[in-house]
Structure formats: C-alpha cells, structure tokens
Amino acid sequence: MNKVHMRTARDTIANPSGIIQLEFLRTTSQLLRDAVLSDEAEINSIRQELALLEKAKLRIHRRGDRSYFAALSEGEERERSLHKDMARIHALARRTYLQKRLALIERNSRRLRTALSSYESACYDLQLQSKLTRFCGSGLDLSRILYTEEQNEWIDRPYSPNPYYQGSLKYQTEHGIPVRSMSEARFGSRLEAIGLPYRSDDLVTIHSEFNDSPFRENYFADFKIPNLCGGITIHEHLGALHLKDYPDNSLKRLNDYHNFSIYELPDRPVKHSEITWSFEPDIRDPKLLRSVIRRILLPSLSEY
Image (cartoon, rainbow, N blue to C red):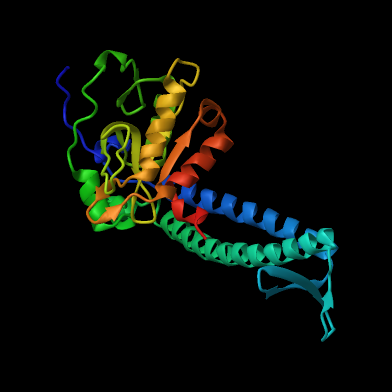
C-alpha cells in the first residue's frame, strides 16, 4: 500500500481562484430545462391517450371476498355494471391511473418551472454583474452560497483517496486529479469545467442496522458530488463490464448502497435517489452525460 496524500473536494474546482463561475448556473438551468421538456412530452402523450379512452369512472364494489365492477359515465348519475368485460375494466382502470399520474407530473412540472425561472433570473443577474466579477472581486465563493453549511464543511474536510492499486491511476482530469480510466478522467473534467467540487475514490462505509449483513463494510466510490438538494450524491461509473467478476461485484456494491445506510453528512443518510451510475456510452454522448449530471445534481426530481 502506497502513501496517499490528503485532499479536499474543493481542490477539484478548476477555477484557480477556487470560486464557482457562471457555468455552474448555466448548466443547472439547462438541466432544469431538459427536465421540463421531458415532463411536457409525457404530459402530451398522456393527454392524447386519455382523449381516446372512454370518459367514465371505474367503480369497484366489494361483497365478501368478491369484487364487482361498474362504470359511471360522464353526465350520468347511475353507474352500469361491467359484468365480466375485462378489457373495458382494464381500460377504465388505466384511465384512472393516467389521470393520477398526469396530476403528479403536472405538479412536478410547475415546481421545475419555478426553479427554472429562479435559475434563469440568477443567470441574468450574474451576467449583468460581469460574470461574477463583483462576487469574485469581493472574495465571495458561489459554492458557499449554493451549498448548505454541512455540505461546505464536507467539501472542505480533508480525505484520503483509495490507497490500494495506486499503479492503476494512469489518467488525470484537466485539473490533475488521478483516476483509473479515460472515462473517469472525462467525467471528472466535465465536473471541473462546470465548477462542481467532488471527491474521487473516497471511502464509503456501509452501516448495517439489521440482522442481515452487507457483502462488504467498505467500498471506494468513483465520485461523490454535493447536490442541490442538500445532500451528497454517490456516483459509480460502470465502465469495465467486459471484465470477469466486474458485473457481479458492481451489482453487489449497488445492492449494498441501496439496502443499507450510508452517512456522508451528520444525521442525514444518503437517499436512494442520491445513488447514481453511468456506463461508457453515457460519457461519450454529451446529451447522455448531461442527463447523468442532472440526476446527480437534482436527485429529488425523480421523487414524486
């Protein structure tokens, strides 16, 4: 085992001044815009399907152990029995499901639009201030404004990267952070270009609160990145699925991440939505990479 030098997540901010620049807000704004467009596409698809379905409500009645179905059409006060017309029953059940899903997506879309408006306003204001010249000249760090106090403490806290297999650290990000593959170097460089602080190859400790045990108690995550929801996202790049045992070990790792508790911040376990991963095509395709970064920065958008 070789000696590993301590570093902090703030060391990875590419800007020599250590201050996040306007690119961060521009990227976040684009991620939100992508999410709004995605929701709008699904909303339109659901509305089109609802227009083709029968305009009636499915009623379910229970008598003992049996269920009886009926339909209440629009404009009628009396429901009609469906007997055993299972195709119609399922169609009406899908209509109810689509209506509920539509309401959830529309609510989420409104929330996204509010956030987007906020970020676009921020971008506009910051552009008027000559790309943060006023903040930078005053010695202010945008990261300390965007992140919570606990997140900033995490960003500044020194850590020791994985001390094992130092010989495999053959690549570097644009900011000189050593990594194990060209894809990890590209991913880390993209985070640096945006201005996102991150830890690479940092220890993940699995906390077992039940009788069952994880496959391992410790892992080293490819990346840990503060997100805009007050937490830390743990990201794994699954870039060697062609190697023997790699797929099985990766699945075990993700299984432990999801089934047991991980604490990066005091009294705040990492949420399921804050565990993300990518594959080789995600790094090569700018659109896919933007989607990955969106899930990393805005994990709560996938939670209704």
